[in-house]
Structures are given as structure tokens and as C-alpha cells.
Length: 174
Image (cartoon, rainbow, N blue to C red; front, side):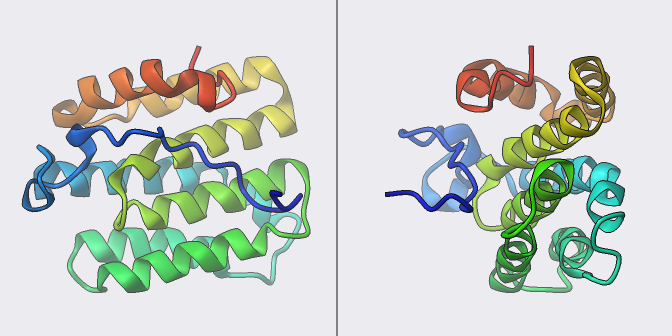
């Protein structure tokens, strides 16, 4: 039975080879993997204030976003970024609403280093955070804001991923 406090799994049951690196048998290049991580970090960072307003002394979600970017720059190993993501999600454990979703967004951003398909988790949780704080229209604006920041080389991939996984991502991408 799933814990009440565990984040919802939003990965597909069958992994999309477009989100598996070439060296692991998929089609994702390292450059595109890095772009996915940076975009996820941007989405998560955009809503960090919703967490920090409730927990100003807890650095874990911000550190997770920083680790995602550090992984792209080659400054930390994947396992370090992944661990930072777990710590950010731990920061959400006893929270509800916008602050909780913002911490999950940061955690998802950091674990893109491990599984590229978590890019959509960061975006979806960020939209959920904004929805919780400001309603449906605010969530739609957040989705548009995120899409405006999609780098060209991964834009079609992410938009298709949003279409394919929208139903398991709380329909936040409609």
C-alpha cells in the first residue's frame, strides 16, 4: 500500500526509448539529456518560493535544483544529484499543498540526471504547486511559461511527452 506522503509515480509503465541514453540502448543524446535537466531545473526553480515561504530554513529543494545544474556542468556525479532529489522530496513529507508540490518539483528536477523522463515530473509538480496557490488559471499560465522556456532541440520531444503522459500527470498539460 502506498504511503500517504509518497510522491505519485508519473513514469510510464513502458519506458520510452527517446528518454533512454544512447549508451543504454535508447536514442537520447547526452546534450539533450542535459537540456532536459536544465529545463526541469528551471521549472522547479520557478516555484521554489512557494516552498521557501513555508520553510525558509530548509535548503533541500533549492540544493536539489542546484545539483541538477551542477550535474549538467559535470561538477557532481549522477548519484549525488539523485540523492539531492531524494532529500528535496523528503522535505515535502509533512507538507501539503503548494509547498509540498514545489519540493517535489525540485526533487524531480534533480533525479533527471538518473532518469531523463523525470523532466515531466518537475514540470507537472511545478504546475500543481501553482494551481494549489493560485487556481486553475494560474496553472495554465505556468504551463505556458514552461513551454516558452523549452529549448528548441527538445521542444517537440517534451511536448509529445506531455501529450502522452498528461493523463498520469493530473491533466496539467491541457
